[in-house]
Length: 74
Image (cartoon, rainbow, N blue to C red; front, side):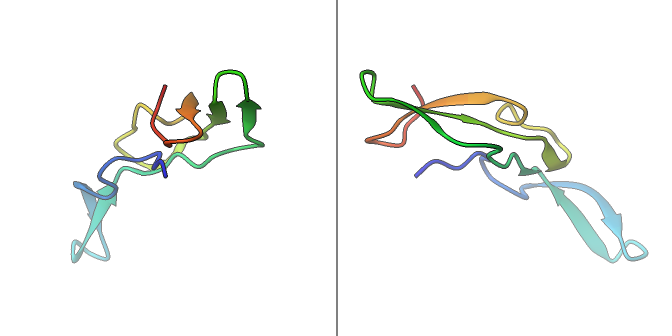
């Protein structure tokens, strides 16, 4: 299994509800579209969308190559 966000919600980015509730990020980086598979390389390629909140992550708006047997990035 691969998560597109490391440590989701680990950074306080502001407050809401009159300063009573912390806003946190990063969040998001959803997979957009179909996954492409290269059987010869054992790789799966996924495209991600934008983060839903700040701070942005290196895995948003990206194409990620994963080993489809282990789930680890290539």
